[in-house]
Length: 138
Image 1: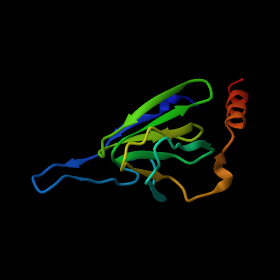
Image 2: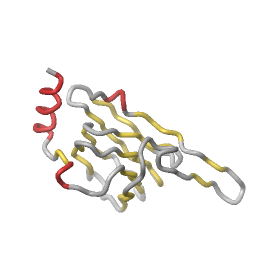
Image 3: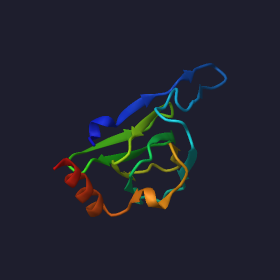
């Protein structure tokens, strides 16, 4: 499981004087069938979100408004993405730790997910996550 599997996905844009439009179709614009959508907003300054990995769930994270950073980590290597365009999403496959921080005032984070919520799919301890990925790599 490598951070190289994470990537920015440019979403379709229709630009016109009355306002721009971006749309997402599961299995077409994102690499999975869409099962759940949620969004984060009113995140207080200095707060962090995420802080977990998923055993099988895949996500696309989009800054609908404002900006924030996403730190991704595969247990060996990490990268930071600064999201600030509503027509670009960060694809995060399964078994990648993610942390979201540096939220600008008024930012809105949209998350598209490949499955319904399932607490059993989460790694909430970085140490447990890291131990699992390092054992798989050995």
